[in-house]
Image 1 (tube, rainbow, N blue to C red):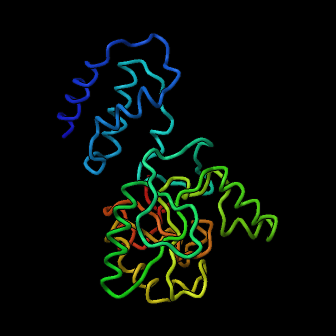
Image 2 (cartoon, rainbow, N blue to C red; image 1 turned 180 degrees about the vertical axis):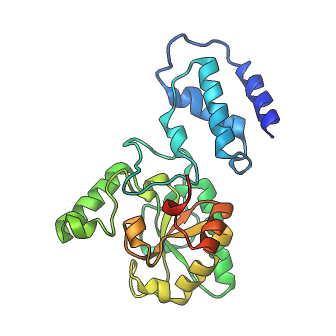
Image 3 (tube, one colour; image 1 turned 45 degrees about the vertical axis):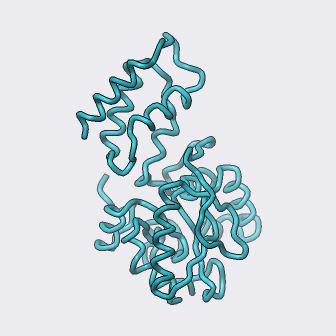
Amino acid sequence: MKKFLWVLLLLLAGCVSSVSEEPQLNPVKGTYRFVEETEGNLSLVDDALRFSLYDKFISELRLSRDPHYYYRSITLLVNKKIGLPVDFVPKDLIKTSVALSPSSSFTSIRRDVNNALTVMFDAALEDGYQLRFHSGYRSYSAQKRIYENYAQKFGKAQADVFSAKAGHSEHQTGLAIDITSPSSTGLFAVDFGDSNEGMWVAKHAHIFGFIIRYPKDKNEITGYIYEPWHIRYVGIPLATQLYESGLVMEELDN
């Protein structure tokens, strides 16, 4: 696989007619799309190889780095300490195709996440449980408004335990979704975790590549209260590892 991708990279590089001595003014056009096409199926390329190819591509053709490229990994850790650039927007966002809650908002997520979510929602329905999508991707500015509204209403200290500051929300990655169900008494209530749907999600989400990002008894580590409605796509291997170990992302060895 590595040899194949490197050969493909060299072949594609040969199609570039000219290379400026100075970094291009539009790094996204000059780098991101090129490497996206080189990679092909993201699930077949691990991060180490992807970054290696990207660095080689940048150095060989002397192009500007695209900062977005380093924030698109499905295993990206975002928390109170680790944030995202103000202008980071995933480039493969689509409107979700799954069932929405009556008051849903921010209904875009990344393409691969939507595919996995569709399979999970269908599997839940086959087992007799209805899940609803409530909120997905939020921009930096949208999260800023949400956090500031909560801080004004509840006070900053209280807001910090259930809402992320702008740049530190997983929703900006396009990999996080707030879900609910018709049987839950509230959109974002702990009782969702005790509902049949919530228990089904907690037991089966990892099969589809999702985790309960802020589980019980981990608030001192994650910095957030128990949120059974907040799921995060990390891919099946990592989701299974976290589910079986009972760990959260912050507890993994880097």
